[in-house]
Length: 339
Picture (tube, rainbow, N blue to C red):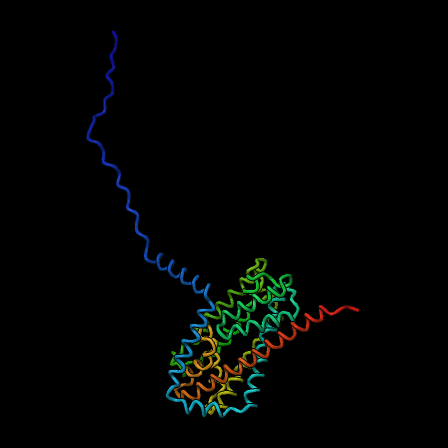
């Protein structure tokens, strides 16, 4: 008997609905903010000089507006400073520039650079001229001048940028340690200096740890942190530069009639460095002194700041004139016939 098997039949129902795919979420607002910020930053970097000039003009206008009602007192305060005092202040500025330049030479030498001292000093003078408009512009000018004058002996740009960090770390550490001088003038809470010291200490420790990776070009500039002797020499050079600027502030404040202490001079220097990171140009000196000591008299404080800028300009230009003369002398010596 033949066995007939029934075919397997599946029940046929209504078609299944198509799967619903999750909708693509729109771009987060944070992404748009990041893109806008990146575009703005690129624009500022491309027009760094224009931003510095515009910022300098705006800052100068604001400063003029502040002292507009104290013109007579301002002129009287300026006239109190003698030529001898101004000359000494300019010499102190030159001491600070030379000491910091030698510190830069030590960090580059530790990073493997073989640049001679004189070409490096000439390049450094160009940086201080550029820093009259903006501190970052001065750094860019200094590194560009060094790479242009000594391309074979100078380390690459990432190493030169990293070589600035040990100097900046020492300066920031000194500023944090003396930030107690800002409590009174700015009305800061007593615990702010503790936070400053902790933050700078953590950053310095991080730099010391990263200096172990000195085989990478970016961190070769941190090699000066490897040996205790090099670190002590660098600290001493930066300390000389800082003390020279503190002495210059104290000298000029007393010259215009401001009864300022050494702690006031330190607070003014910290304010100068902080405000100098902004594109305010030559107005940084007057702005810093008015911010710290303006409550005791805007005119005298502004006068001391203007004189600080003027003597700083004289010191920087003297450094630049020496560099130009030395470059010309070296060029003529190279063209002179031998024998």
